[in-house]
Length: 442
Image (tube, rainbow, N blue to C red):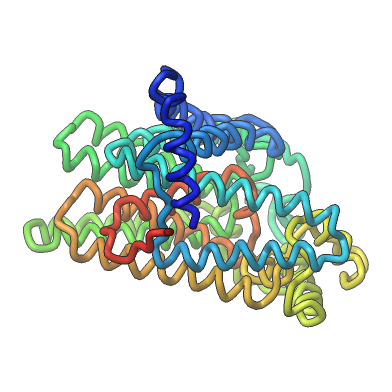
């Protein structure tokens, strides 16, 4: 149906397309605005970051209606995503706080719309994936360097970011927070975790291209990235970093195990040793890492447990359609369930948050999307002989896994700085994978 409408519109507006220099070169405008979305995320306010994404969506819609040959098709994991979005729409109209939920819905619409716009662009320009990765790499790399420099400035905390009641003053970690708005080390840690696989993937990309100078530069940046993630003091980021490094070793084995087995084992051993040496030898990082297992003895952990309990009660009372998307209405309704003194903007778990906001079927759809996407990506990584595309897909899926793993203990996933990167990685996977599981719309 959609493609019939597009075909009719393209036939009627073909004269306009053929006589417009702007329309004929519209893709030349879409790419810069996609890249500006990533660059703007490093310094713009959250409500302003979506400006460039809206332009990308607007230009994509124009292209779909005027350029002949443009079609809409869905992969199997995108069917799950469409189902999730439809459930969110139903949840919106079932919300008792419709006005507040509407703002959250517009954000969800923007993120998913940006995804389909990037995917549509990459379908026609598959060789431009490297430019999107370059824009993300520059943005994340700049934040890595800023965070690295901040670690030597002994920054004062802007808010209470860690429980210092049981720690010696000398062992308190001076947490870095980059330039992301709002300034918060947990947001910064999540952002670095989301973008770090691109930096790590760049090392292998240039290694494959035999650009030794670029390999050295990106390797140094990767080491600084690991250091900066430690300095954020974000414990969820620590765990996600372990996942990233573990996945990198497993995936790289496909290329190095047979030929460079001894060197490969040596590199793995050294990296694991350095990781745990940093935790053991640096007291501030050691105390921060071990606080993960302190349970109720750490105030941050205890706060999260209280929020989890209250959020579960919210879900039990709204399990079918949820309360509506968005942190505004979450905070309004959470006030009816929270323990005194434990106010929260979210449930601190993205899966619980999804269930609370949009109900059990939205959670099932979202999990179906993630599982199907992961299965398709892993199958491609294992079977494909196209090294460059394997690197792109590997970096993308590892980033998605890292964000989802971090999301077990935080909800910074819903921040635009992560959302636009996350959906771009999904678009990259969607574009690179073979087309046997694509469903064309009539």
